[in-house]
Length: 364
Image (cartoon, rainbow, N blue to C red):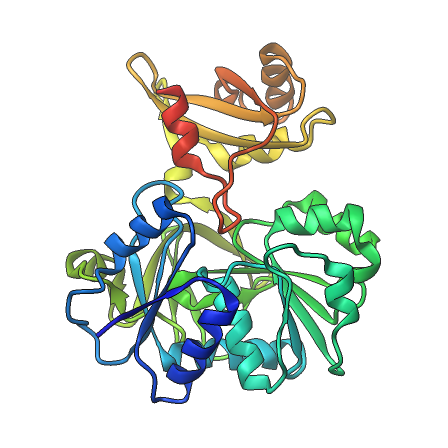
């Protein structure tokens, strides 16, 4: 039996408490807006019997490049992730929740809070970080957020950020420029890598948490350990593709630099355009160095002539010719975008990731 609960902290917290105590009914948190709620319900199929005996919660992937999938997480996986996180950060503490608890980052803030024995400070709806930081009473103080939130708080609430012993940054890659800003501001921001399938971040600053193992297959990142999910809800064929012999085969590319994992990008971030392999993440990183570009994402769009057409979605006032010349200064000119689409802001999912699907739909 699977129970649907509203995706608010006051509904998720008691449901989570019950499953962590071993006496609760497995649940799936549901967003408030009707369209998102319907997508979650289709992914988690609440009326169908559960195929895993150790399922505690089902969360959905963000669906940034397609339909979301229901990810089954066990009590053991939730606890292992929270315990390893506290071990890496220096011990249990009190957490501020500035994220939605129906995504794994927010849910695990609540899990860590329950295991630490400190009430979380809820700041998810109207996140006044200054007030939230002032309300903390524990000796050690933590929070987690996506890079976009950190960038905004550095502008408005840097003093509040400095009150935390650690701020875990996940949900998307943390740009080098943002790392530099946080460091200059004296903010203890730790980039984390992980996903719903790994029970939240399982690699902090390039080093796996206790119990987590990493290896590369060609460039594909593989992960094993006690935080892994039990499978995709009612998708056994997809589960079998990615869970093999205790290893989760991610869709991400990586390499080891001085013993630390460096995430290069997604496997589908390399497209063939006019017969040339183009690494989209490298083009995107170069664009973000342009002084007129506030934010950007680079995608491959299907094209009859080129196979994939490299398109830059840019927040900032910059022309196509300038973009192409700027990229070509350090990368092959054949990698330079063939289109630039100006936006006032990148469309974001509630998880803090760029809504790649909506961008692609807008240009096809």
